Length: 75
Image (cartoon, rainbow, N blue to C red; front, top):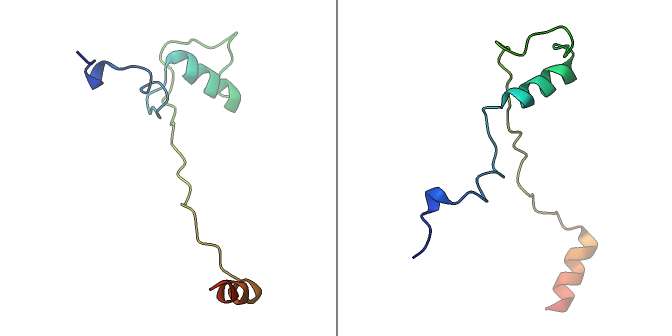
């Protein structure tokens, strides 16, 4: 028998998550300077956005005149 895909865990840890754990939220807030580990209480932390940045896809490289001439000669 094979494992049901909902029970597989290896790939699930690699994908993007919007919800952060408390440790991750503290680290992000400390990085931004909004949380001091010595003074502030880790309970009741403010929300921290975790947005995935999507970059554009690959674009085709435009051929220069010299490359076009080489392509025609090869035919």
